[in-house]
Image (cartoon, rainbow, N blue to C red):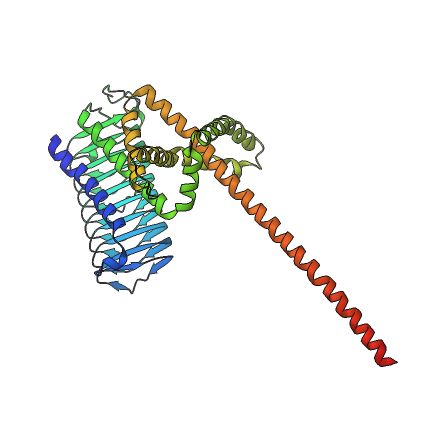
Length: 420
């Protein structure tokens, strides 16, 4: 695979997706006549036939019908079991696609599960990605994530990067995979087999070294072009997830950003508090695991910490980007441009080993502290609201009680006069 073809087939679709999505954000529903827009919790039944493009947004979305145009979905829990003749764009907390997509599928989510048929290419990014064994992708699969499991049948190339990557699919053409740990079988790949692992450090891994027990063969490909493309793909995927945060959780997002870097005082307070939390968290989790009864809480704390470690940098990038934008006179409230600027800063710093690692560590501390302060502030606000309601109720009771006593006394006097 030559580098120009590689860029045209990977970078251009990702950039096109960003452009389409940015354009969709700037277009109001009133300005588009040939589309069906639905908000809040939405269910499209199996009997429903939409002869148009369909835009859905809400918390829980289930699309089981048929759409002749494109489908754009933004939500927390998204289930697509129906058929879409055009492209599908799905962004949310969890995305499950079991239907048939007529063209390409673009999705960014915390959890992604694909069990259906994609007649063109699959572009996916998320914390956990699963392409199940019953799935079919007729062209390319291009993605980035934390835990990645790829199975099924792929009609062309597979390019994937992640923390832990397991590939069991049949790949008709080339395989390019990169991650902390990659498992793949060369016998299932029809074209070039190129795998880069964190432990390999640029050295070819032969059969019998690491995965001899698995019967796998990993070959490390040292290519600067692949590394650049993977970084661009990761940049675009995380940017899309940041857009989901902005659209679905605007109040919480702005609250966390303000507590992260509204000024130097907020930043230092959040960073120091996050440092204490990150140091104490392993001890607390270990103690809860030892007590057995605290195991569910330990699992919950670990899950929250992993979520913040993976997605928390997006809030930090928004805060950094907002500071940079203000320097150049950008005073709008929208966070799309600050998010882009912050991601660019992180992308450049990540290529500097020591600086990049230090920046990531500071990001983790600041986000931990900001989220904790945000939650604490909401709890305090709820408590003060409860106290105010109780005080108001007591005052109203004191006002009505004397009136009741007075009315009773007057009634007794009137009754005594009548008896006389």
